[in-house]
Length: 243
Image 1 (cartoon, rainbow, N blue to C red):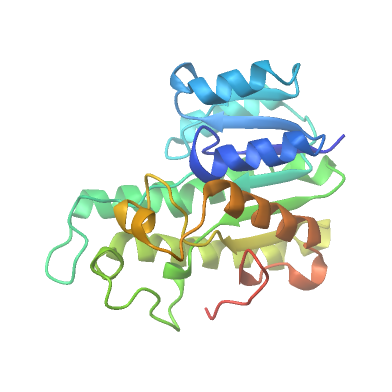
Image 2: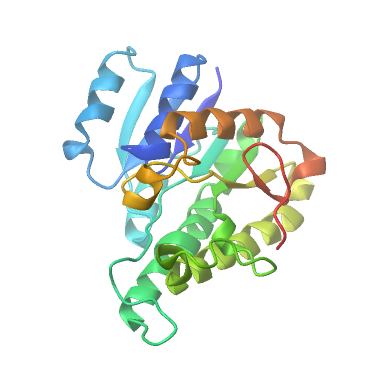
C-alpha cells in the first residue's frame, strides 16, 4: 500500500489531496498545525478505518519537524507532499513598504520549512518504494515571467513571490543532489484555486478551479513523475514554467 505524507492537510488543496489518495487506496499521514480543530479532516479519518493518520506539524517550527520525525522513526514514506504555506497578507508586501518580520516568516514557512522537512525525512523517503518528494509551489515564484502582472493582489505579494522562488531553487538542488538515491522531486503549481489563501479574487474568477480539481490534477502529475521530470518546475497539467 502506498504511504503518502501531506502537509497542510486540513483544508484547501491539502485536504483535497488527502481525499484523492485515500480514495485511491493509499495510507495517508495527514499533517496540520492544530489537529484538534481540524474537524473535517478528523471526520474523514474516522470514515476510512485507520488509513488516515492525523499528526501535528507546524512547518515553520524546527522543533515540530523534529517531533514528527521522532514519531515516525524509520517508517517508509513513498510520497512526501509539502503543501502547507502562507501568503503573508495582509501585512505589507509592496514596492513601497515591506514588513520585515512578515517577510522572514513567509520565507520560513514556504521555503525553509519544506527543505528542513525533506532533510528530516530523507531516510524515510529512501526506504519508500516510490521515493517522490513534491513541493506545491506557485507560478508567482517565476523570475522569468511576471505572472499576475496588473492584478493588485498578485503584484503586491513580494514576500510570497520571494518565498516560492526560494522553494523552487532549494527543491531543484535536491533533485540534483538526491538523484543518486533514486529520489524524484516534483515542483508543481496548483493553479488558481478557490481557497482561503487565494481570497475573493479567485472566488470571483471564471478561470479559477476548485481544490478538488487542483488536487486531482496534482495527483495525476505526481503519478507520472519520473527521473526525466525530476526538478522541473511545472503546472499540474505538465506545462513547464520558466524559472
